[in-house]
Length: 508
Image 1: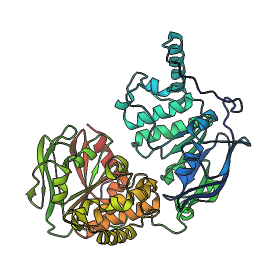
Image 2: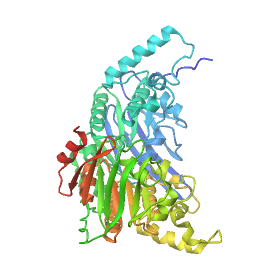
Image 3: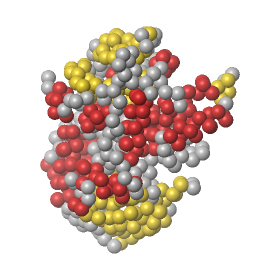
Image 4: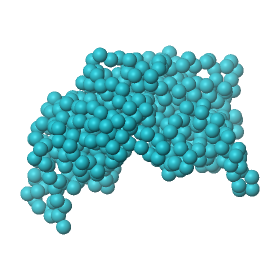
């Protein structure tokens, strides 16, 4: 049976985006209010930034426009005509497409098949294939992307996979793109290309609604900004009148320090706590490094350089074919997560959803998992002791929105990230490895997480930090190793410049 194309209604004019208006939009989850009476209008062809702390309701608003969530109250109008959006198909038929942080692609299909998924006939018609190929070529010309239509999506790097998602939206006739943290997982070159494409699409009449925590990036791109705080609309104003500092003041209602906290020097004579000796896996090759007590070591490099894989190998999450890890001079026997944790290693992984949290379980259970044995007797958990311990650590990381029994999936990304840190703070390990510590979090949560890392080091924990943000890895680290093609290729102290680190990452 042929798959029917999605029709584009007559009221969505070709080449022209509609004016979008939302009025009184509200959304609740149980006793938690996520959005409350949000009202704003977005002009045709505008690049509009939605700003706010984690949990402010930004992503929820985009998901309502994209049909992924149904609002409890309020209306959505296009060119003054109220539309009912209860599913993604409603949004698509009205010319609106949502591009979320988790891309909605089928890894086993080709680029071309993903782009036209649900919009073409499966009859195998040669004529249809030629039309699809011609349409694909026009989309590439429109965006400037250079994608092989035959490439399997599952083999593409994340930046190109995101390009496929954008092409899929445009192939559906989208004139409104709702983009949630589109640059969070991209390297510098991919970010620059995406921002250029967004400007090009807007200049041709597409409306772009953007949620991002990168304030300088947003201010350099958008026409106007809307600030949400605690689910309420605070202000909508021209971006030109704002600085990152002024936006943060509106977002959090208080002054936030933009500066990474000063890191204390490593104590003289500090002993070596962690040593990787010749770690080799499918992605890293003969990697050796040490970290002393109270030291923060940064691992820099391009996406795919082996930074994250070095941490996974040391943690026992990736099988090693050679090498070993020593904690306080004692070699870890075996290559497993269980043995790594027993030896005193903790890991805050790159993907909290896939690697760090049990999304269907409450925040309290996630936080308690690594130290469960400390509060167990004869296989039974001492619930009272656990409750007290978790409550204290939850307050210390300013974890908000967690409700008893509610899955951690209901929390904002920033609060999930705080929970990811909290699970290792109940009983701090000898070594904490942190991969992309502030990805997808707001400026206030970023400041808090930076403070937690520095405080752990000050208390004697050896810390290893991987970050795609060079300013972050340079600012947080006592020393920096640069990785390229699975190997450590350079070492710098904390006075290294961005240019020095980038040159080492790129040069062969």
